[in-house]
Amino acid sequence: MPELPEVETVVREIRAELLNRSITAARFAIPRQLQPHTPRGLARAVAGQTIRDVRRRGKHILLQLDRGLLLVHLRMTGRLYVREAADGERAHERAWFHLDDGRVLAFRDARTLGVIRYVREGESPAMLNCLGWEPLSDRVSPEELKIVLSRRTIAVKPLLLDQKVWAGIGNIYASEILWEARINPRKRASRLTRSEMERLCQWVPRVLKRALDRGGSTLRNFVGADGRGGSYQREFRVYGREGEPCLRCRAPVRRIVQAQRSTYFCPRCQNTK
Ligand SMILES: [Zn+2]
Image (cartoon, rainbow, N blue to C red; front, side):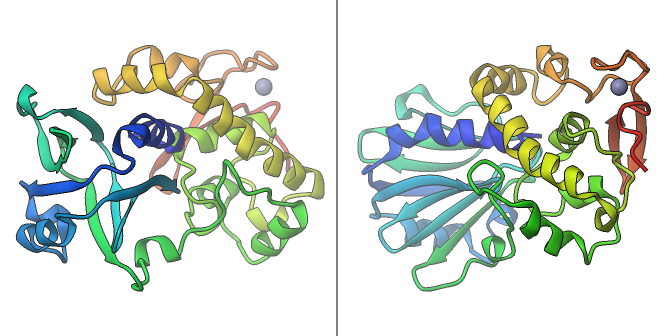
């Protein structure tokens, strides 16, 4: 699944190609991905509009148009790219935005779990309103974090996946962040110490920035393998390393399941009570 650094990489890749290009026509193959819009209704809404900006919020890709906002969530297998119209459709393409320079913004999605929405100007995008801090750009102080955590009795690992706290931290980077911050993933969020909160505030942006710095190659590997295997996984400090020695203290890394998701951690150097 593309995580925040991969989504940010996609935005950087397509931004320059899309800025100030007009959408001449659009087609959609899977109506379910557009609900509540219909393919025809959505095509009519975006046709003739110019793309004024391309940005990211959490794991959503946002295309600012003249009169509204086009939202794309890649979910499991989605990919967004610009190609020449003459090159023809590739396998698993599900949506096509034809541009005024003869190219196409294509949305490929093997498992069709991705989402495309259109928000008219003046409307409030429900998908975005509930999102919390931006992990890459918002500077969160331990004091601000404490106010949020004081009410939360869940463990800190599932808390990091809550989009209302930080928007866009996925399962892989939640393990990586907690390993770097030396915090026990099973510890209750409301019981983190002051210094643990400080470390968490430091490592959330650091881990994601580090991933973003190698985002391009990561993404190509990721896409080539359709989300599985490859050199992509070997770059992680703790994720996917069950039984291997901790890179800090050599104790074997453990895998546990929290809220139906795998968590990897070091039982020795993340053994904070
Ligand atoms: Zn360790």
